[in-house]
Image 1: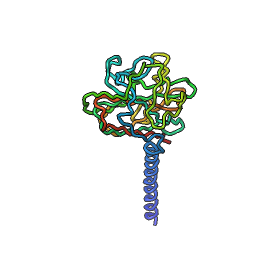
Image 2: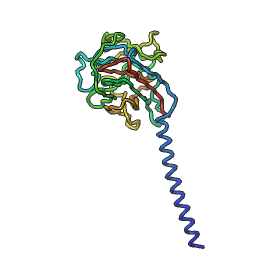
Image 3: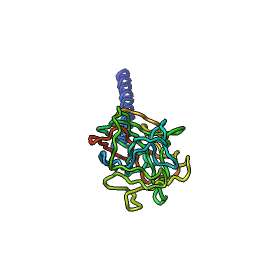
Image 4: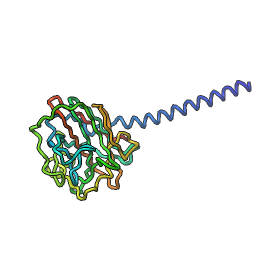
Length: 258
């Protein structure tokens, strides 16, 4: 009886260990599932006609900031750009305080660059974006074999790189339509400022972000802020070069993990 009793106890302990392992795995998977599910704040497909700005080699900032690391912001670039309101911001009370962005391209014949801008209500304009180069830089770039550059008749050059109004390409317009024309005001006051709190990352556990270059025309990245001022909304800049034809489309989804 003692042997059978000890054997039963041993099997009981073994079974308890197995259950504990499964419980830990379930908790981890559930945590991961929160990253890849959720109600979408944005689910919209953008086409050639949604590129409202360009061609240019820079993105708005206190000074011209290059679209991609290693490029000359003062060169005659051939990137066309659109601004997309993600209708979302980081939830600092979440396990992963990020906004998840799912992208899916068709007809991409060149390179696509993603950058993030942050908006705060009552602040007078956008004053935060991700650093493109040097220490602390982050960004997300999708590369494919480039076709010949074409001219988009519906796009226009931005009048300047700073203290400008930029229109979003969302069908619903801007989430915070402060000026009644679906624009956000770029208001970077000091060169070097506003670059350390917004990030693009491929790992929601790495909130400081990273630079990623991929050939995958469908995937996921995350945007977040780590600064002292909470952002009320994120605006995504999408810049594309090469051939932007009638076959081009980009579906973007944004969601906030819980």
